[in-house]
Image (cartoon, rainbow, N blue to C red; front, top):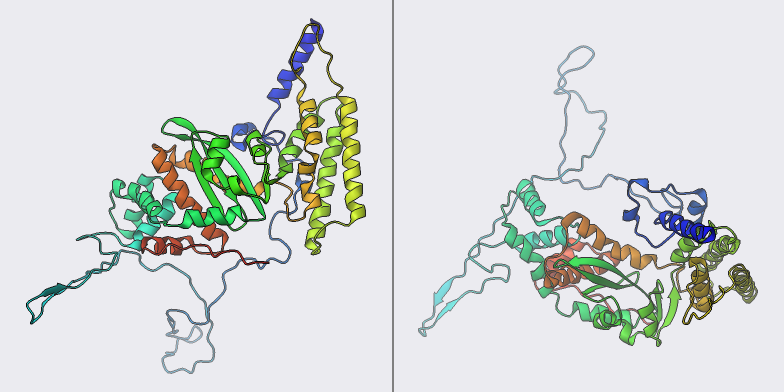
Length: 454
């Protein structure tokens, strides 16, 4: 009984000690008791805080052709008080102030003339597409509304306040709520183009996260690269939702993910696992008695990541054979040490089926069974160490729900994510989101160019 109680207390303490840095729990679950970052965790990253070496930086620089020049003339001498109106100019000191002009709506009235021909027929001029009604907001205002809602996550009421305070425009909240749906309806073939480009990419990141839609739990799925983003929402989390997204069904490249079981259903793809997840889980296991292999494997992952990054920065297509063989051999030794520390538990008499194992044994089993997918970043230098790209892209879902709440309808969620895919893809390709949104509302949505053939 004492041994059983000790085991139960140890398991409960393990569960209470889980947080975002040693498990897959989100950082929002840490609350005010968020643990401090250790020096060891800081050393894992490839980047140091602040400006990175070689980056151009950002600062305000003077321009050669200012919009306006104002000359400030001294009227009297500070020494004797003499009049300086006719005094010679011996030098000029210049300073430039960058500021906003007075903002406000510009109203353009369009007249469509009706003219009578000698043949007896009357012909009327054609209004431009933006003049859709007797009084309406143009593509610039609608683009700003979509930008504030789908990219900056502003709620409808706060968007109305901003437009009223900054532009002097009193826009009804109902009008604002319909702008994102209008934008999604005008995307044309954008979603299909991005889906096809992702399906043909060499390496794609996949992830999913929960979201409240119409009061129920749904799942937002993402497929992304450094230049493309595609988000979709579905009531299910597994294969049905992934098939509906339409990327993994025909994908034959490297799929980077967190090991969620439905991803293995797509066996035509080459799989790579996110090692940031493994580092967090290894930290949790390493804190337990007798699990020194976990700390060793954590250090191995950090070293292997450094080796791969150094080779990639040097322009190498792959690691040299000797280095790769040494790293993979060391991985096998650590896994063997882990098995020695976690022998299979004895089967109770009369017990059938699988025997419940400890979290350490379960993690060890995954790292052993999927060692090729864990080490993919070493064998193929195109593959990143972690699935950070997908996690960064999906972070906006949690931000949207924190600021603006859940989506009231599935149609509304689908419209938001379609527009977000459009903005995110344009942003990744160094385009101004406001400009591409204006193109969209002018009836000419931007489409990403096909990738260059290597």
